[in-house]
Every structure is written in structure tokens, then in C-alpha cells.
Image 1 (cartoon, rainbow, N blue to C red):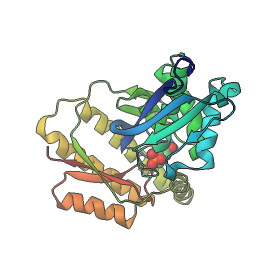
Image 2 (cartoon, protein in one colour):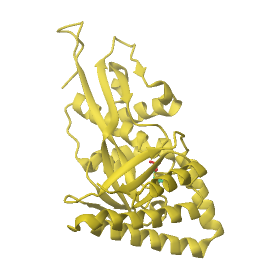
Image 3 (cartoon, rainbow, N blue to C red):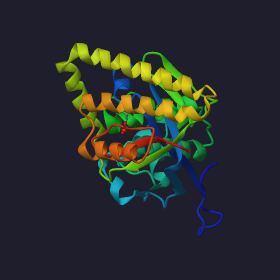
Image 4 (cartoon, rainbow, N blue to C red):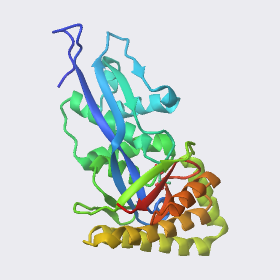
Amino acid sequence: MQPNSQSDPHSPASVSGWGCAKVILVGEHFVVHGAPALALPLDSVGTRVTLRTADEGKSRLELPEAAKSDKSKEVVDRAFAILGLSDRRHDWNVGVESTVPLGQGLGSSASYGLALLRALAEAIDRPLSCEQLSEHAYEIEKIFHGRPSGVDNTVIAYEIPVIFSANEGIDLLRQVTLPRLILASTGTAGSTQDAVAKVRQHRQENTRRFRALCDEAKAITESCASLLQTKFGSDMGREMGKHLDHSHRLLQEVGVSTIELDCLVDTARNAGAYGAKLTGAGFGGFMLAAIDP
Ligand code: PMV
């Protein structure tokens, strides 16, 4: 569809695209170093990008206050360029609305990138496969995060649980049973790039131990994946909880947890959760716990 306001100037044609958020169940950070991560789409929050026909030469970019940054603007230019639309950049006003907390590990940047790409694909009537969307969104993720693993754009493009490994590719988990999970926020944001740099430094200083941690992370992801694909009954949450606890210990060891995150994790456990961990890059953001349904 081509946006076209000529038929009714009061109701300009508009198209929109949506990108959900995501939760990393297990494997974050170690995924940057080759281990697999297991991520889930989170569709109760997300980003909507709306494109409306612009007045000639006067296109606007409307961003939520918290997301106003040069990077957010660069992303729009990049998305147009990726789809070969640079010369049409000023044909559309771009409006962004998001309910994803920024910098809290729920994939706000990938959610934005995917919403924008979907809106553009809709505007030029060029359907993109999940694989194409994910590849393009990865290019956008690089603007925000340097050299991300690719887990966020993958799970948000496919919108189903995935095992993601930079070395071994992706495994789409179409039939899974999830335990009851809850999320709680520390209310503070952390920089993914800083957290990734911290882990990289930890790896340099503890090479052999880090290799062992990667192996443990891999084993946790594999166990969680088989747990989700087995009809496990009521013990599933309990089993999952053990893996979440283990995963949190690994993330603590590489230095990306915080007092607030540890406090939330302990609070969840003390309140009866089967297990809990930080989710995403850490240095703030969300805690994830498996609980009794
Ligand atoms: O930016 P976040 O908090 O959604 O986390 C991304 C996950 C990391 O493993 C920390 C980084 C990556 O590139 O995979």
C-alpha cells in the first residue's frame, strides 16, 4: 500500500508495524561467546511504528521522550536504506509508541527495529519473511549495541520461543509448555554495551574459568529446552526454577547482577518462587522467576 492522503486530507493514509518484546529465559551474555540462549517473545508489551504521509519536504519523527536520541533517528535512516528507500525517506512521518521499558532487558531496541521494518514493508507492499526481518533488524541492532549476538532480533522477528546460537543457528520451538513465569523490575536501566564489555573483560581475566561457565550455560539452555518440550506436569516449574537459579549464579559470577537484582531474586525465592534470575543484559532491569501456577 502506498500512503496517499489525497483522497481525504483530514485522514492521511497510514500503515503501522508492531514489534513485541522478549524475555531471555537462560543463556544471556554467554550467547555472545558462542553458547546457546533460549528466548521467549513477550507480546503483552511492544512497539508500534506508524507511517503517515508527510507534507512535502516536512517529514517528522515522533519518538517517546525517553527514546529521543541520535541513535533512534539513525535507525530510521538505516531502515529506509536497508529497504532501498533512502530517496523516499521524507515521504512519511514516522511515529513511534512503545510500552517496552528502555534498557531493562526486554529488547526495546529490537522491538523498535522490527516495528519500523514491518511498517515500511507494509507501506511499500513488500512482504518480508521472518528470516529477512531478523537479518535487517540485526543491522539496526548494531546501531544500538555494537556487535550483538542476534538473539533479540531473532525471537522478536519469529515471535515464537527460540534457541539461538551464533555458531549453530536457530531452533524454533513451536510446541512448548511454559511454566508460570513472572517478571519484576528494579526500576533502573542498564547499558547492554557496558554489561557486555564487563563480561568480555571478565573473560579476558579468567579465560579457563570462563570456558567452564560457557559450558554450564550451554547445558542449562539445553536442559531448559528439553524441559519446555516435554510434558512434564506439575514439577516443571520446580525443575525450571533450579535452572534459573543456576543461571543467575553464572551471571553473578561474570559481574552483571546488581544489589537490586539480587534483592529481587531473593525476594522472589523467599516468597516461594521455584527459582529466579536476572533477565537480559543486567546492570539493572528485570528479574524473572518461575512460580507455582
Ligand atoms: O539488551 P538486552 O538487555 O535485551 O540483552 C541482550 C542480551 C545479551 O546477551 C546481554 C547481549 C547479546 O547481544 O546477546
